[in-house]
Amino acid sequence: MGFSDLELVERWEAQREIKNFMGKYVNSLLLGREAKMFDKFWSDREDVSLGTNSGAYVGPEAIKGYYKAQHGKDALIASILKKRFAERLEGKTETELHGIGTFKAKPLVCPIIEVAGDGLAAKGLWLCQGAYADVYSYGPSSNWTWGHISADFVKEGDGFRLWHLECLDDVDCRCGTTWTSDTSGTSGSSWSSWTSWTSQTSQASWTYSDKLPDLPEFKELAKFELPEPNVKAQARSLYTPKRPLPPPPKFPEPYAFSDEAANSFSSGDSDSVLIRRVWDVESIKTLMHKRSCLIAGDRRREILESLWVSGEEARRTASYGGNWGWHVGFPAIWDHWVLEHEAWLEEQRVRNGFDSVNVGNMYAQPVSTGLVELAGDGKTAKGMWYSIGQETLALPDGKAEARWILAK
Image 1 (cartoon, one colour):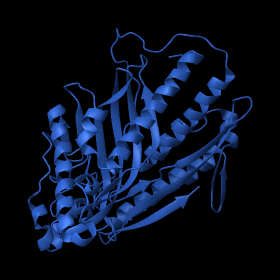
Image 2: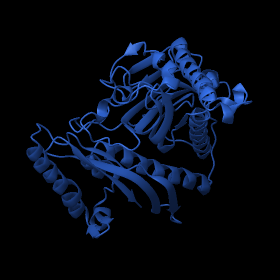
Image 3: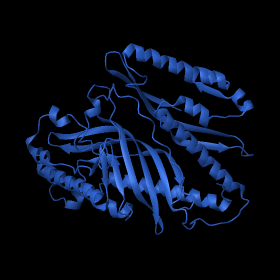
Image 4: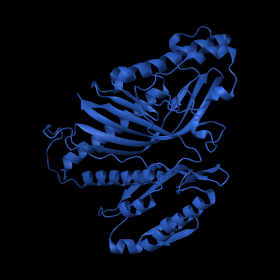
């Protein structure tokens, strides 16, 4: 579908609005504002849903109940900590104490956003490397998380609102421990890795409270239970060395809100080259974000076939560089990055005794801090990104080796 220059600007504005919207959402989580989350961010439709690893909260009342429980636990933690540290916290008001002892950091990277043709709805996908701290019956604890977030948005009034939100973890690992242990995939606490998004309770065969003794001053928290999803279904399991590699998150696909809906974008015609250049830069960023998502599923063939150049001359001069040199020409890139990798995976499979490749493996290469320069003629561009990623590879002894990968 072709768009006029003015329509491209409006679609770019819609994408920016959604990015800012989700930034405000995760910032509200960090500030512990669950009591106001539904009214501030969600649609008033009856079919709204909040999806987690172990199920979904479907309908306004289920989602409101979820946020209410979170807010209630924060209030309980504040009252417990006020008693425990009376000398330091004496005289603090309820407002000043709200959120003490907890935080939920969920930075979002690699946005891929598709706005419907009529401008009345949109879909988005983000990767997230997060962390959270909480207080349990055994005391304070904190976790690292790795996952992704996908959402449907619907336009209501002057802006977009959440329609469907799905927040899935691959890793929920207590700080100071490793996600490569045999039990790492079931070690999520009863208060969820995403705290304000996800519940792993139906998935956990043991929790940290089974490993650590309860402390008398925090015993009230042992009775706390997060409401169960009213639609139970395991959408994604946490990582273990024996977990088959799950597919990467599905890319958003543009859709019309309804076939007969009035187009909310303006119709217009402009010859502004600047508008097209702005859109091209955003398209390049989206391409690199798609690459990051496909890396998570080890879809190397798909990356080269769908995201790399296709012209004969461009493929002849294409290059892939690393710390130790370059592979020049598409055949050389394919041999190194696909065929050699697939041969190594088969050797690993045989060593580990698995029926299929990539069991127990996990990959992540999210990118951020994107710098893109478009050529004067608009036909080529250069870009640079930073990446804080990881690679986890299964070993023959049933364990796995994890390593951080910091790259540019």
